[in-house]
Amino acid sequence: MRKQKNLLTRIGDAVDVAKGKTQEVGASLMKKAVVVERKARAATASVKRNAKTAGTSARKAFGKAQRKVKSTARNVEADATSAMGKAKRAVKRNVKAAASGAKKVAGKVERAMSSKKPAVKRKTTPLKSAVKRGAAKVKTVARETGVAVTKRPAKKRAAKTRAT
Image (cartoon, rainbow, N blue to C red; front, side):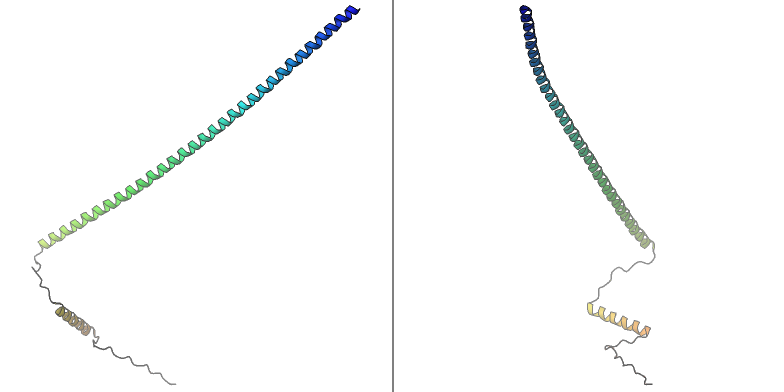
């Protein structure tokens, strides 16, 4: 019995040792699994961060491109409006010039066709005689209208008040 007990003891000891070894191997595997899990989480977070920054930079680039296109469109529209205004003004200017030229030509033709020719030359008069003539004309017009022209203005009389 002693031999049998001794064998059983040995088998029990071997089972205990095997149990210990399996626990060590299991603990080692657990540590490795925890490390792998941490690395996986870190990699996942890194990928998420990179994706987020890529999305953000893509949105920023898209917004920048939109603003650039809008700005360019506004500039083109403003330039087109300005060019249109300049063209309109140029056309008006040319039309006015053509009209005034036609008017001049029509006047020349009319003068050429008329039987009455204008005086060749007018002689200029000295300033004093021109002033005298102007004053005489004023007096004549005043006389015709019935207004007396005097050198001093007439005094106004005070209105009489009636006592009642």
